Every structure is written in structure tokens, then in C-alpha cells.
Image (cartoon, rainbow, N blue to C red; front, side, top):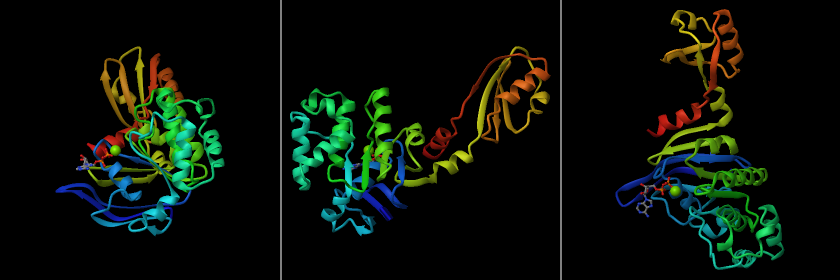
Length: 297
Ligand code: ADP
Ligand code: MG
């Protein structure tokens, strides 16, 4: 087991930041660690990396208890902390040499991670001269330099622009082919785009721990459709696979189906049978987001 969290709690004074979290992550999994601000994500990550000691419970990296073996377990971990602290006055390669020294790894590793994180064009600049997206790559390169099996990334895309977010997501996905990755975010789509599995916490408590494929299989399909004329509910009800329907505006309906199969063609056929025209039709598959809202409300 790459990561094992056994009944772990953390209190700051009277405040419970992490409450009895208990889960395991297998080698090779990419797990999205999701929760609103203040949920306890960073606190758990800091315990996995040995920066914080749990109030209760035990954390393991590759089956080694983190406390009191932080030095050993951190050899297996690449950690990108929240807000990506970097020495911005340093040159990229200079900084990576510094990190390589700390880990006592060979300098040849620097070129490897520069290549791996797509930093080649920026490698001779000072860190503060780079865009935020490239600074994030430097953070990732530093986390990868000792070739760890486990990556712990704390909100790696927060504060980036939409293009940079896509680039960093793609990079994490690529790196994740060879590593176990736990990365935190408060964006559900991010988890959908990158992960095999999602763990949702709220106020320190575990709310959801599921494979994404399982969540998606149970997902409902929502389609909004506008017809050119009013239609009675008794006719709408005849559309197959329908579980609920709302006539929320004039001739506009929101239809919820209990299937993943695209129902748009069926709605088109239905409209034709009824002598109606479709003015607009949109799919609204927001159910993973809805789930997130439900469990974190
Ligand atoms: P997240 O990373 O999910 O936003 P955090 O782990 O940072 O959440 O915080 C969890 C809770 O613990 C929050 O309510 C936060 O205010 C509190 N907290 C975090 N760090 C400290 C600290 N050093 N001292 C006191 N409370 C803290
Ligand atoms: Mg945090």
C-alpha cells in the first residue's frame, strides 16, 4: 500500500481539523482529494509528509509509519506544498541543484526533471521571471527530483489561468502513469479530468471515497429542452427513461434520465411525434458537482 491513513485525527487546540480519517491508496492510483476551503486537506497532507504530528491515529507511506520515520518516508514522497514556496531570486537550474543537493541525488537528475516537466525553454531564467504556470512546473520538478514513488500535491492548479490549469492537469496525468498521486483541489471537474478515484472530505470528515467510474455509472443525465409550443405534462411523461421533469419556464423543460446513454435523439423523435420543434437543447451533466455540493453543504 502506497498510502495508509488509519483513524487519523488532528486537533489545533480545541478545533478538530481532521476527524478520524481512514483510507488506503494503492500503488499507481491517482486520487483527487476534494473539499471546500478549511476541510482539512492541507492538514492531512502535512501529516503524510511528517510536518505535523497527528493527535490520534497512524499514517503510513509504503507501509512505514511516518512518525518517527519521516526522514525515511520522505524519500518516497514528492511534495508540492500549498502556494508552492520557491526561492524566486534563484535561477531555475540553480534552485533545482539546491534541491538535488538536499536529497543527495546526482546532478544528472536535474536535466531529467527539466525535460519531464517541460521547463527546457525557461530553465536559464530566474524563477520570478516565469509565469505562474511555469513556476508551478518548477515546484513539480523539485518534487520529482529524487524520483519518489508517491506524489502529494496540495492544490497544484489554484491561482493559475485556464490554459495553465489544463497544462498542469495534463502534466499530473502524465506523471501519474508511473506514480501514486494524491492531489487536493476544490474543483470537481479537475478530479474528473485527472483521477481514477475521489475522496471528498468536509469539516475534517470523510464524505465520499469512490472510484470515478462507479460514481459516473450512477450518474443521471439532465437535458434542458425548449419546444416551440406548450406541451402538457401527460405527454412529456411518455418519454422513456425519464425519472423526473420540471417545466421551469414557458415551453422549457428540464428532463432527468436514469441512463448514461445520450437521450437527445430520443427527445428529437418525441418532438417530431408531437408535432413540435426544438428551439434549443442542452445536456447538463453536473451530477458529480451536485454530489460535491450535497456532501459539503
Ligand atoms: P484545507 O487545506 O482543506 O483548506 P486546512 O487543513 O488548511 O484545510 O485547515 C483545516 C482547518 O484547520 C481550518 O478550519 C483551518 O482554519 C484550521 N487550521 C489550519 N491550520 C491551523 C493552525 N496552524 N492553527 C489553527 N488552526 C488551523
Ligand atoms: Mg489547503
